[in-house]
Picture: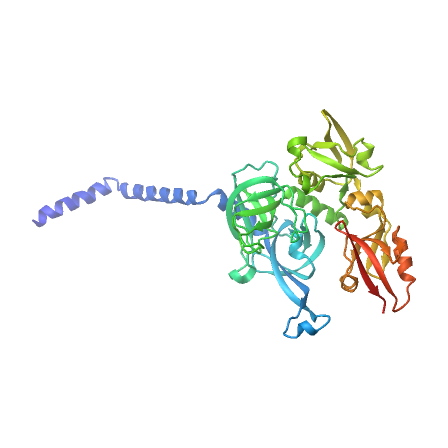
Length: 468
């Protein structure tokens, strides 16, 4: 029995080894090839994209000062309510676009920052300097003093396909996750050219945005959105949530096209600010969102005399059907075209009047408010005289008065006046220029009460003030 059992075992071993002992190495080679194939299959486009971009992703920690109103059981009897300044920390994401430390992030991430700390993927903390910011596009540029940094590969958003894979990288919840490596989420391009209706919580213009279902959570703002090639195509900016506010992603994320972010970055690095292009015309607003279905475009409601559009022969009542190759369905489409224009760019529009259509081209100029003479009042209130151009630029009802361009927090608290208000009269004196505001106010002595009438949001309001 032992011989019968041993014989097959010996035969089996001999068969495995063979005369040249080559069967076992062949089996090993087959298993190695299978493992390599499995490893290759795991390395997807998402993995490659994350590997290329993540070395350039940084965390942005901001310290800012906010005025907090203290509330207690006796606050009802205290006038005015007690207020204190409190330092608060917030966080976001950015990505390096130049090896010498230039970083792009969202403007709302660094708004009102007293200090900025940039954390590199290896955990190194470096002080960041705000080079410039543009609330309109929600883009800011931060600089750190470091050379030879990894740079994010940059692509373009203009050839994105609906349904293609994209990867969002960022630092949600900052250091609560325990390390400084960026978080990677994957999804697809859900839509392009999305316009988000403005609201009180969004001071920027979120136009021509890229929509994705890649999870974007608090702290991801300012981070890169990359395509399957590992090229940054957009800047993650905002999310829609079920309960309102940025409390968590429900698959509706929006990102700013990289071309817009780079244009803003270049202008900020060159001049420290962003010059807005002026077209000198205004189109019908939200109340006419559906008019394009019957008219085929957006209606021009106001044209500044002697402005670029007027000189091109475009007048009130004309219907803009197309601008620079983009179909115009509502005022947000028109705002999206304007947002990406440089001062001095030519804009080609297709105009319809009745059944006739033709094409007009004109060159944009500087905003009238940027070239107007500014007058400073009360050591914290900058005003300019309202002109037809400024009236059109700011969609004002009033054709005279003094527009408030800038106001300090101290003057806001003391007077209630805000940026964008138009001072129309002081007591019984009608205001026709910015200088007149300064002359009238400076004529008042101490303890003199006076009333300021002003336009805000198309409504006339007044406030009573007293000099101490």
